[in-house]
Each structure stands twice: as C-alpha cells, then as structure tokens.
Length: 267
Ligand SMILES: O=P(O)(O)OC[C@H]1O[C@](O)(CO)[C@@H](O)[C@@H]1O
Image (cartoon, rainbow, N blue to C red):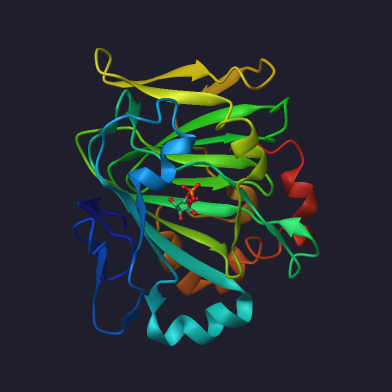
C-alpha cells in the first residue's frame, strides 16, 4: 500500500537530501552523483530571464535502483531517474524545468519515447503539448500529488513544474535508457506555449500564453487519470510494479509496439 511522505513509499530506499547532494541511497542500491541544473543555465527558457531564484534549481539522478535489477534494466533498455526540485520561485514563475522533447530512439525504430512520472513529495504540474512547432496542438497541465502517476506520450514537448513554492518537489520516472533531450523547437519558441506563474492569492498557478506560438487552448486537468491501458496499478509504486512485472514498462523503451495506444492520447 502507498503511504504518505515525506512519505510516500516509492518502493525504494532512495531519499531526497539537500540540493547539493540530491539523494541518499540505502545499502544494495545504486545511483549517480547528481547533475545540477543551475539558474544561470536555464535562464534563457524563463519568461523573465534576469529573475532571482535558488542557485541550484533542480538535481537530477538518472539511473537509480536496486543493484540486482541493473542487468534487467539494461536488457530492457529501461532507466529509472529521480529528480528533486528546490523550494521557492524563479521570480514570478514557479520552480520548473526548461522543457524538451525526448530524442528519437533507434531502439524504438525511430520513435521518440514516453516518460512515466511518479510524484514522491510536494506537488507537480506536468505540462505538455503535442508539438513545439508554431501550432502546439493540445496543451495539458496535469496536477499531480504524492503517489500519483502521469504519462507523457512520445514526441510531446513537456516540462515539470513545482506547484507548491513552500515545499521541494521530488519525483521518480521511468525513461528510455538511451535518453536524450531535444531542445531545438522549444528554444526557437522561447519556451513552451504557456508560462506558469505563481498565483499567491489563490495558492496555485496561473497561465500566460507564449506569444511565439499560434493561439491554442490550455486544457487544465485537475488530476491524472488511471492508465488502465498500460496496466498501471495506482495502489503501488511504479518501481514496485516493475519489480513484480517488468514487462509492464516495455512501452517506455518500445512505444512503437503500442502505436494504437498513443492515438488521441490524453494524459
Ligand atoms: O532539461 P530540462 O528540460 O530542464 O529537464 C530536465 C528534467 O527532465 C526530466 O527528464 C523529467 O522529464 C528530469 O530529468 C528533469 O526534471
């Protein structure tokens, strides 16, 4: 059973630490030294690039897990990442990632790959849009709390936003092992098609359209749905579900085998 955080039971002895260290790992677990995304590095993607904010905005540990699972993860081309975001704000904007599209994968026959998020602590909005071309297509903002799961489909541009400035956001995600981020179209449009702003009065986020895109409708989804088509069980952590039935996550490195499930996908 899932429990609350700062415990939500993510099924792993991997815990968020300070922004410099990122994560601590229990015995029998592996994980890298974290990669820091510093404010100066992400300024070009912000609505107000000269804003003030934490020096380390988020710390990324790609490839974490239980030691005995590593051979299977490699064989399946799967990777579990963990990311922790600082508390606070980036000027008027919430703490957030820059926004990218997953690169096309040879292993997936040229498809871009999806991502399966699980929030561990704090609150997130996973913002996503169908393309980062002039017409972005459908745009979704999915508000997820600890224990909830959100799937970003292949080739969609997306960013992870902390929805509560008072608390650090931490999450885990299943990704393709040979992951790579494509920023080209997002950067050409100076970001994604909507900028989130902190709405202190209403204790939430408000949204401002990015004028570098053609107009589109922002579809706010209050909460994520259950992904029954992929057999995701909302009562267990996504790592535990991998442990019990690894094939359940084959759709992450091989979205091409599940082509019909991505047609008109709604997160
Ligand atoms: O490089 P960007 O767009 O800032 O995003 C990095 C983020 O993307 C992730 O892959 C999650 O989609 C995490 O590694 C991190 O939160």
